[in-house]
Length: 280
Length: 280
Image (cartoon, rainbow over all chains, first blue to last red; front, top):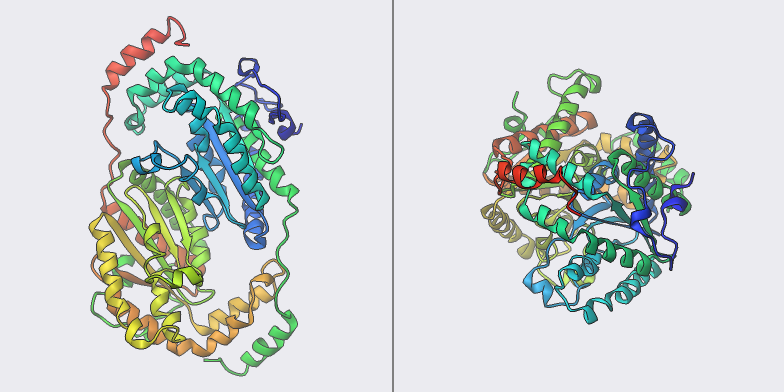
C-alpha cells in the first residue's frame, strides 16, 4: 500500500474529516509489528538526507500542522531527529510578536525556507493564518480569505527554486486529545505544559475542523500536497510520516556529487610522497 | 577523572600543542570499552536538553573548531544529534559572502546566538577571523589582532544574557589528518569532499598551530572556556565532548517548570465532566 497515495489530498478535492478514521493503522496490528519498518525508514532518512546535503540540488520543507497534542513535537523527535542536524533544522512558529504583526504574514516565515541541500521542518507554519487567525477572527474574513492564494503563490515560489514541500496534517479525535491531556496531568514531568486554554480551545473544535477542511482543499497542490495522517496512534503517525518523506526523497534520485579532483592524481601526488616524510 | 578539568585551557595560560597527546584516550583501552559510557552520555544529553528547553532560563552555545578532518561534522552527528531538533540547531559558518564582508565580522554570527531554552552548535565560528583570516592575511595584522578582545566582549555579552559557552578545539596530528584524507580517497561515497586545497593548506600547518595557541590563550575565559580535545581517536573525541557538555548541563541544576495551573482543579473541571459527554 502506498501511504502517499492513500493519505494525499488530491488537489481540488474536499476531505470530510469526520469520514477519516483517525485510528487507522493499516496492515499493522500494533506498534510492535511496525517497529522494524519504522527503524528501516528512519535509517533510510538519515542516508537520504546525507545525499541531499551533499548534492545541493534539492531542498525539503516539511510542514506539520495539527490541533494541540496531535503530535507535532513527537514527530520532530521520532522522525526528523533521524536526520543529521548538520543540514536539518526545525523552526517553530509561535504567536507572532508585535514587530512581526507589523509585516505581512509571510515576512517571518520566508527567511526560514530551506536552501538547496537543507531540510527544514516547520512546526506550525504560515497556515496558522488560516487556522487560529480565522477561528478567533484575529484578522477580518475579507483579509484572511485572501491568504489561501497568497500561500499557494509563496509555495510555488519555493518549489520553483528547488524546494520539495510536504505538508502533514496530523489528525486526532477530540476523545484522543482529551486522553492525551489526561496523560499529561498524570505525568509530573509534563504537567508544566498544561494550560487552561488547552481545554477552552476545545469549544472551537468544529470551527477548527472547518478551517482545516478549507485549508486542505484550497492549498493541496501538485507541488505542495497536503497529507492527512491518522494520528490517534503515535506509532502509526511516525510510520506514515517517515514513509512518505522517504518515498519523496527516494523519487529525487539523489546522487553524491562526482569528485571535483582527479582521485588518482591526488593519491599519487600527496599520499605516496607522504610515506617518505610528513609534509609538516 | 574529570575530563573538564583535564582538557580545559585555564584562562591566561598558554598551551603548547606539540606537548598535547592527540592520541590520548584516558582509561579506555578501545572504542569498545567506551561504548557504554558514550551511550549513557548521549541519553543524558537528550534528557538534559529537554529540561533546558522546558525551563527557558539557560542557553547553551557549543563552538567547534579544528583543522580540516579534525571531526567537527562527526561531532555534530555523533554527539549533538542526541538532542531534540526542537530547540537545538547547528550553524555552519563558511567563507563569508560579499555582503557579510561589508559588515563587522560578528554581524553574521550574532543572529545565530541561542536564546533561552535553546542549544546552538557553531560548526566553525567567529574564531575563523583569528585563524584562516590570520594565516592567509585576509585582513591586516593590526586589524585581526584586535579581534581577540572583540570576541571576548561579544562572548561576555552572551554569557550575561544567560548563554553558557563551551568551546572545543578538536586536535589531531598532521599524520592523522593525512590518514583521514586517504580514507576519503578510498571511499567512493566521500570522494566528492576532496579538494586539492585540503592538501595545500597543510603547508600552513605550523602557522595554524600558532594561531590556535594564541586563540586558546587569549580567549579561554571563565565564562567561555576553551577545551583542547585529543581527537586522533574519534570515539574518544565523542566521549570527551559529550562528557563535558553533560557535566556542564548538570551543573545548571535544570528544573522542569512548575505547572502554571492547579492540576487538581483542571482534572475536576475537564476530565470528570468529560465522562458524561464529549465536549464537541
